[in-house]
Amino acid sequence: MHDQALTVALPKGRLGDQVLQLLNAAGMDCDFAAEKSRKLILANEENSLRFFLAKPSDVPTYVEYGAADLGFVGKDTLLEDNRSLYEVADLGIGRCRMCVCGPGSLQGHLDELRNKRVATKYPHIARQYFETVKRESVEIIKLNGSVELAPLVGLADVIVDIVESGRTLRENNLEVLETVADISARMVVNRVSMRMKAAAIRPLIDQVRQVINQRETETKA
Ligand code: PRP
Image (cartoon, rainbow, N blue to C red; front, side, top):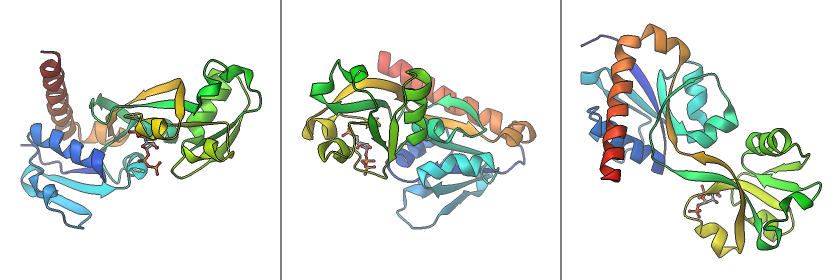
C-alpha cells in the first residue's frame, strides 16, 4: 500500500449519495458516510482517505486550490465554473440535459425572437451558448432557483436550465426548445496532485473506471 493520504471532495445531497455508492462498489468502503451525521469531514484511516462534503458548486474550487486532491461534481458546475482541473471520468450518474426552455409558442421560432431575455442559474453557460455558439446577443438575468418561474411572470422570454425528468417543465406549460449540453457527474483531479500523488490517485481512477464500465456492460446486457 502506498503512503499518500488523499482528500476527496464530495457534493452534498442526492448526487453525493450516488457517488458514495459508486465509491463503495469501487472498494473504498464509505459505509461510515451513510450515518446521517452533520460532520463535514469523514475519514477512512485504513485506506488513507479523507472525505469532505461540500456544496456541489464549491467542489471545483476545493479541487483547483488543492484543498482536495480529487472530487466528484456535475458537468453543469464544471461548465459554469471553468476551472483548471483534470476531468478523468464520466460517472454516468446524475444524467440530465442543459436546455433552453420556454413557452410552446416559441417552438421552432426561437431564432426569430431578437434581444431575448434569458433567466438562468448558469449565466456563463447561457452566455457562451447564445453569444459564442449562436452568435446572438442576449440579456442574461441571473437567478438562484425556481428558474421556470421567470417566463411565467414575464421576467424573461426563455430560461437555460437543467431538465431531468421534464416534470417541472410539464407542470408549468414550458417546453425544451434547444439542448445546450448533456450533463452527468464527473471525477476531477487537482493538477499538482495528479503528478505528486500519482501512486495513490491512478489506482483510484482505474477502480472507478472499472465500476463504470461494469455498470455500462450490465445496462446493455
Ligand atoms: C432543478 C432544475 C429544474 C428541475 C428539473 O431544480 O433547476 O428546476 O430540477 O428537474 P425535472 O426535469 O426532473 O423536473 P432544483 O430541484 O435543483 O431546484 P431549484 O430550481 O430551486 O434550483
